[in-house]
Amino acid sequence: MFVTNSPEETQAFGEALAKTLQGGEVLALFGPMGMGKTAFTRGLAAGLGTGGVSSPTFALVHVYSGGRLPLYHFDMYRVSGWDDLETTGYFDYLEAPGVVVIEWSERIEAALPPNAVRITFAPGEGENQRRLTVEDPRGEKGGVSLEDSRN
Image 1 (cartoon, rainbow, N blue to C red):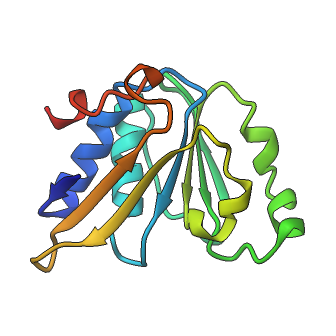
Image 2: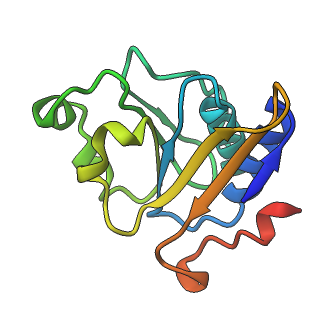
């Protein structure tokens, strides 16, 4: 578990984690509104060399390119069924060479690939403190080194 004490620290965590990614990863973000999922994704984009991340709530997906790897940013908050999910192009992006990050993954849990890195955001003790739990089913050799992201 990782603890951040501000939106800036949550963003820095995302930036550090991005530097460990090789492409082809799916990062499934879980947690209630206001927990820092978009701040984390802004950091992820910065770490990949892209930028300008905003919440994709109304577009459902934003594509950020021009960096080391493309970033495909999904917001599944408004997805209410399999048909909605298919219209986002989600399954096509899973085959793309970049990094897929999904906010509100709990809405599409049955459609997540088995190798998705699950990151759960929960409130901490202070107003801005967040607890981030990262589960990588690929283990140490899966490409995401959590030790590297602590620096």
